Image (cartoon, rainbow, N blue to C red; front, side, top):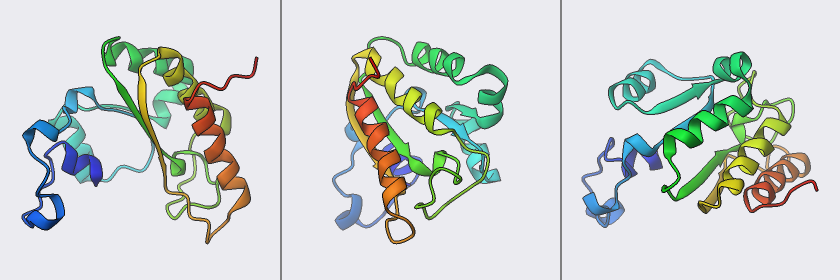
Length: 160
């Protein structure tokens, strides 16, 4: 929903909620990339197609590999685009991430999640990172470890 409001695809008539959001604050849908989609409802599919939003499903990752997908995605964004990585931990398969409120089987592996963040860091264009969908009331330790790993990778931590 935050992306829907920031792109102008969703509207809120109450100025006390999003009254500050003007056209100069909105995101251009041509600079959005979704990676690892696997549970997309018909309305979401229609929005992705209508607004030509770049999206890669788990099918794409299985077919081409995460390295190829990241190369394509970063090429699409271009070298002059500041990147905000918004990482939903529910993109990771629930066999690794239990502490999320929206688990869907068939997601990214832990390594693929870290790889995405590493690729973003390597560009030198990462200006912001957010990590969402962690619910410590469901499970705390392992899910938080996964989240911390993704954030560390996005901030430039490497194995060597």
